[in-house]
Image (cartoon, rainbow, N blue to C red):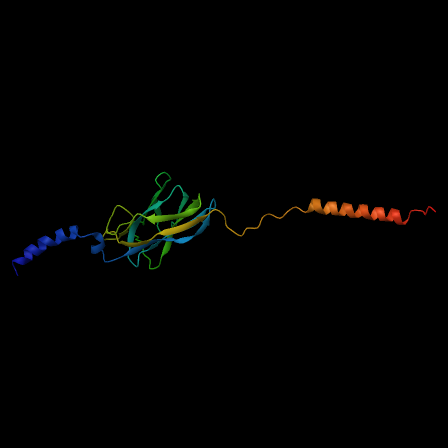
Length: 211
């Protein structure tokens, strides 16, 4: 047994680097889009929140990578909540490839932590054509080059799950009544006809008799 101890100590660092970060990390965090579903009208922008839950873990930063269909949706604006993270060094929209990239960092010495899903970014999206579409996180468990949440002290990616979105884009809102007709010309014609009729009756009734 004593002979095996040095070998085990040599293998521990190797095992650490070979294991994926999702296995090594005891903490877990989630990212979610909300609303995750719904029907939205073409040419009418709507907002989508990106929500972070660290589940009590302290984190130094977040990388968000989203994919959308630029032929169906126009990504117009990224609005970060700086009360969650004070610095957002990356906020880019690539309308050609349909990719949104956002990075957020906590202040030095002040890692962020929460226990409920909290909105850290608002996206403004505009439907372009009718149909079904998706907005999805670029995420693979254990990968560090996609969407990730970096834990304080360990620098491990603790993102374990994401919630993507599926939307229906509608050509019309439905049930919208047509604009009310202008009744002014009709009323004027009716009033004029009534006056003409009354004038004719008066002339007939009070005309002198011709016997």
